[in-house]
Length: 267
Length: 291
Image (cartoon, rainbow over the protein chains, first blue to last red):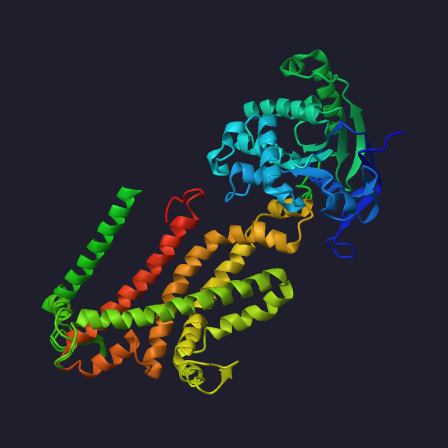
């Protein structure tokens, strides 16, 4: 049996424990992700999907349970840069050129300059923006910035990519294009992905598995295998199976009692 | 870029002309002995002694400083004093910048320090410089550091830094805390140390906050040096020139204004240096709409 890429076992997270503002953000989460798998986390605001992503990234600590990445404790995995991360905002550093942005994680890992430059150019080839190496981030469109952010996340060849609504701020056309690009990039690099999203079609199009979550307390209510095969392209969006899966996810979400007032912010 | 620079220069000249025109206009229509409204003396006198003509003031710059045989033209003398004060102001600004950024880094690093230190930093600015200046200047000759005797100009630099560090500390602290949560999480995800995050994220992010703070600091440093010079009578700079010229103001009022012009020009040059630095440092950043 191979080591799972991500193993979340009996994990819970309580914010502000013991105070009137106590929030049970996550309870009793079990999730195992195989290497190379693409898993989306979907659910209404406050279901804890971003919290779960941050727990996997070891940006916050669980209140209970254990998390391992490639068999390592989450803390050690972070120290070893086992994963790359991308957020809703591309978050490129505006004072660094595109290539210097991609080099950032390599710099922190202590790579030397020529190696860094070489890898940055490889990554630019991968995201199909090789001619923009010397540009400044603000000269690029939102979609291009997000592609650079993905290149940065993958620069040190992590086996795991954690993404928090990375295409949430893009327009629909760019968004669909980016989804296809992401699938291509992940297939080329054999990267495991955990992907947080609000969009049902996005989750279905991208994922091998869609994890449906519900709020208060945050928990996993259903896991849906998508089974649309490995070769997905624009035609997949018009295939019958695609609509069936969308309906299945939508019904799983509909079963969740929607919060009357806005849920707790899931960050 | 060129046209913008030209427009700025034109605006500057226009502003000077407008100020001069107001001066002359008021001198023309205002009451000779000044005036009071509701018992308060608020209208300045318009005599030639109180308000010399602008052209007389400019003309005076090209006459000799004094009647002594070896006297220089006034503008040369003022330039010399301004140069002396300029160097002290630069020293004060550099020292103030180092102290300001140092304090800001300390406050950004340790929340406790921010809470403990910030009230003192703010309180320091309520201490009048005039009260402090003679104390600090009297250090000279009183102690020496490893054979280096504390000179009076170092006291003046320190006093200028005392004024200039404040806006820089406040601006730098805001800048260091300006990166969004996602950027900090990104650095965390790379397991970057606090110092790596400071060097690669917080400091570069603080630059656009530091520039306006430096502009305030530059002006504050000039004021600090001139006030210190005036209140302690240290020779060599524009502050001392203001004192000695004002003693002759009844017979030669235009001369005093020569020193005032020198002080104003000094402030502008130091400010201009910061703007020049801004252009260089910010050349790759997204262009602001207004600057």
